[in-house]
Image (tube, rainbow over all chains, first blue to last red):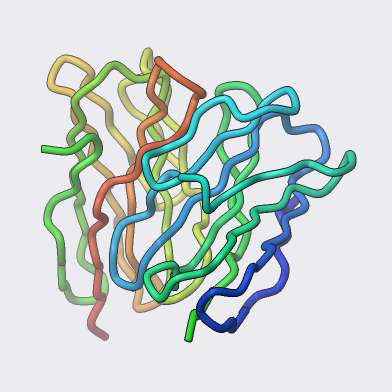
Length: 112
Length: 112
């Protein structure tokens, strides 16, 4: 079965640093997403991306965050000036129109 | 209440018993999806049920959808210790970027 891959699996960064989380969605999918899950809490929507632009973003997704699809395969989430409360599991997902979303295994971000 | 709320929040049963988890939502949906998450791991899609479907089966899983009550249930029959995980419903809402909105999840524990 095709899968969404995320790298790295675990990232430790110092407060104030920038991190880039990487994702390779499934190749023929059209919609791409980033979600966040703080330990023990629900999975929260951050942003959706379609047709090479952001189609929707949540209140969490402020100017600290940005997404990019630099080429035909990668989809990245950049977090600038990380804060302690950015520590969470970040999931990338992709889907075709109206179908099951496939999630990656996540990147565990720890801000120290 | 939030879109996509599961109950119970935690469920503990004996191996071999059936486990039923419920999900309620507020807005109109295209479909509803159930996901499983082992502790600290990624999200694995289990089943998708469309708004015009009432019931769907996959192996030991049975999902129902009642759009008039805006609710869904996930039944796991003949539970096994390996079914221990968190289960989330995610609603694919009609408006917006086809994002999935997750509930808080049900933590299922199967006791051997």
